[in-house]
Image 1 (cartoon, rainbow, N blue to C red):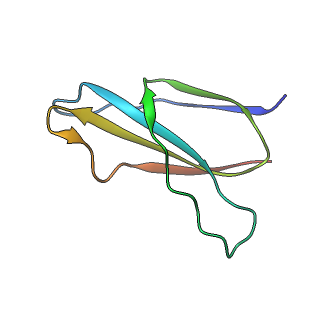
Image 2 (cartoon, rainbow, N blue to C red):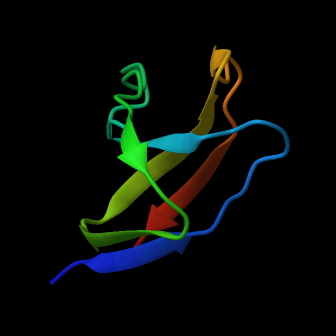
Length: 79
């Protein structure tokens, strides 16, 4: 079994939904962090069976004007 993390989020304005992405950072310090691959999500978003490592969680609001071009992110580690 792996660890789990739960994220809660909200938007101000005309958001009609959210897209989230979880990126596992590479273990080599010279390797670039992969680009996020977004999928529809809702708050709270529960991530389960996480392996040991360093992660970045991204969430972006979706609305009539498209997606947020500067989504917030949260970095965390699982030991």
